[in-house]
Length: 134
Image 1 (tube, rainbow, N blue to C red):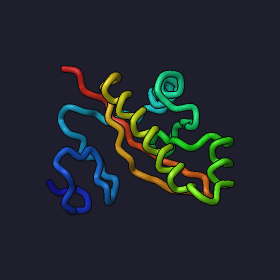
Image 2: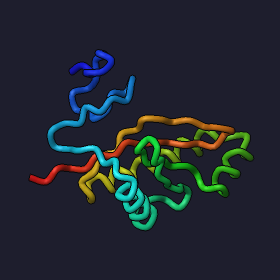
Image 3: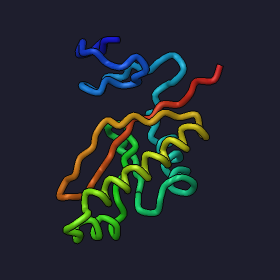
């Protein structure tokens, strides 16, 4: 299918365009944008799903759920000279696994919309959609 905003080809099951970020939520999921609901979700993720190496917060301005490494883990990754990328990859894989479990348990869908590392601090931001109940 094509993004209705930028016109680029995107996967048929996409909820958001990976190029421009436009929402193309399918019929079975609705975007979760309410800051209070996102905060409640962030707390649930922290308590039940996230590995201890990750912290979670809400970007209220953009309606995203963001994840970053804890200070201790970020410092350890920065100090490592050898194996830094392997450790970062392992940490991201652990986060991805935790989010997939939360998707299944809570009827959610997480779509990565931004990954960046300001000043070397890894941050991953996701748009969240919730399964519509009929």
